[in-house]
Image 1 (cartoon, one colour):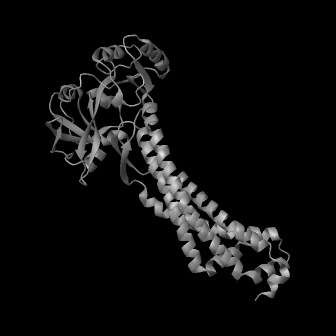
Image 2: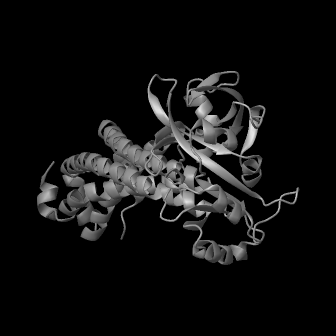
Image 3: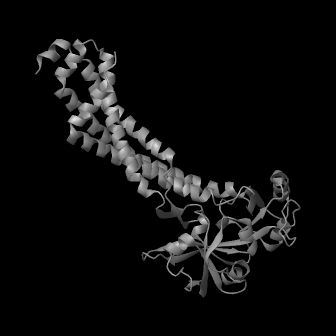
Length: 387
């Protein structure tokens, strides 16, 4: 015979102060847990969504980021001549040669950070349909003009339309702002690659990105280019290339966050433990009565365990509610692959909220296990003697 759930709910309501304080403690731990997942998830999503599965990117063999890659003009021309590359409306290869440099710029909060400055061509935009101009106009090739990503516009000083930002000793006019829909491009500054190369004293490109005419042709073009003795390159799917850059830091963020969360969880479990011990101590006579009425010791144990878990779930709901405002907030961190700042938005997903609730329930179950066992082991006669 099972003890009704209403019994547990009534007892939780009767101890308002201890119930609220314990639930709040568990809620804060649950919030930290969800916050950590949202932080790592937002960073990973920004890089994973940067590339397109329809595109391939060519970098120097062994390079894990564009910053460490070198591709000379001859190699770039040979790559663009491959028959598997899709054609642009003008009949030329739908491919772009790009330059990537880091430049230290001041944030609006007074600190400085490394920002990716990317030299692009007109086809860079055609290859990345997520990137669209939302303010101003496109830069004109051959002129000292740049467009900036939406998050760079929000966080970097001098990145508003009409401003002149100093790069490589030259003042560049900011003429437009583009929205890359939360990808890492939102943190970058783009300009004419052919103008950037002499200004930054870079005679080579960092990457060549192209669209395949058929996805099934990736293996053939990859095998041919990587076997070409004139160049030492690696060909990768663009989405996989950028996603790989997020793996290390995302794992580190989750690891550090979980370490902090586990330390806090010990305190929350102690709180649940004390609350349930107090509940068992104040309800000794009730426990004896339940046992005398025929409820099994297993039912008593399960009842108190459910009560502790319910208490924690209430706290988990509080944690989820506290975490909801975090969704969409902008922050930034250093991308270890490029040593540049990448701004991204926290992503609180339904799965993360569910994981937060489950984490809270586990804390409650652990905190209530020992007191529940003590309640179930009460001797009936001794329990009934206590008033």
